[in-house]
Amino acid sequence: MSELCRPSINMRQLYHTILSPFCRKVRLVLGEKKLEFQLVEENVWKPSDRFDALNPLRTLPVFVDHPAEEGASPAQVTNSNAIIEYLEEVYTERPLIGGTAIERAEVRRLSGWFDERFYAEVTQYVLYEKIDKRQAGLGAPDMDLVRLGLSNIAHHLEYISLLMEERKWLAGDQMSLADMTAAAHLSCLDYLGDVPWVHYPYVKDWYVRIKSRPCFRSLLKDRVPGLAPTRHYTDLDF
Amino acid sequence: MSELCRPSINMRQLYHTILSPFCRKVRLVLGEKKLEFQLVEENVWKPSDRFDALNPLRTLPVFVDHPAEEGASPAQVTNSNAIIEYLEEVYTERPLIGGTAIERAEVRRLSGWFDERFYAEVTQYVLYEKIDKRQAGLGAPDMDLVRLGLSNIAHHLEYISLLMEERKWLAGDQMSLADMTAAAHLSCLDYLGDVPWVHYPYVKDWYVRIKSRPCFRSLLKDRVPGLAPTRHYTDLDF
Figure (tube, one colour):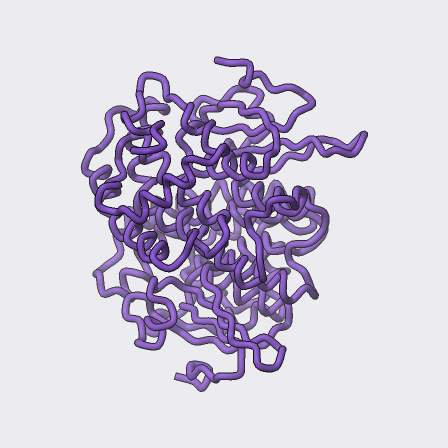
């Protein structure tokens, strides 16, 4: 693996795994905020000793910050929501949860919708069966469960379509964490070729806009060993 | 039903269901912040027309705020995390996500742990089988799934014990949202008599402290029709 995988002591680090929507959401937010960081890949099923010491609960992502103040100790934050709220509080430029209290609530509502409902109904089934089982050595995917997850995707894509008819971005006129979260989940499924874009032109247009942003480049370079992405995964115009 | 179930136009309302940890978490936060509100009970499986119009996605809780400024329109917030962050921003007295950015991250990490992991591994199984199926008319609980959920409770209670050996409250010296979230999940299981308190004296001591607070009184008065709580549910010294 590249030099990116050896954590240095003076740079921000994000411990992650490639096809996790929660890790990808944080990567997109760090990218949009133009914060430099080092990616350190971990497998929660076979954690390194270093990662086990860092986070005995073995959850990903884990963010290690090195505050600018001289002599300040590194700050470690676990849980994708906690990391993003921390980044919004500490690095206030280019906010992704912006606007009035009620506009911020709408961003968090939609971000929560994708992290909770879309994950429970769609991503969880597909990623557990196709990716986690592979990483954990638990055998072949149960294709009935994959199909169940994928049959649930329709009403979520219809919901995004509905929002896109009236809004420029998911939560309103500004791009926000809601867009990052939804795109993080969809990008994992898209790697596997599991998003029926052709039926949802509004969703595809919105996704192309997100996918074209510099913050997305790192995600498009991801490769799961032995599992190539679908042909259009890296195309900005698919 | 009581007068509490008829929403008035000038008071804050929380649309909720009784044994939902996400609704209970918001009730505890509203109570700790000493914000008056009206509880409106809903059943997501058989929603009222009013609720369907309010939240077509049919998720609970939904909070309706009536800002103090004259002429301001009511503000509606959905998703328990979005509601609580909104309350923290708008009603800054008695913060439940307080301290430095890193202390706030620890509160959100632990609150996320209970809403995500404890829910996925414990509460979800038990409440779906024992409560949701009953409300939705889907038949008897699958006791194998209930037992699976309850067998997962041990490592979470051990984790709380471990924290309680070193800390006054879950996230540190101050009571916080982390305590509210953990107590919200445990209180649903406790209604059903499903928490093995006797093996976890540190956890029990912590829970007694939370349970004795005024914000908890409303939860202790809850009754699911036809399903009485366990004998010790309302005892402050059990």
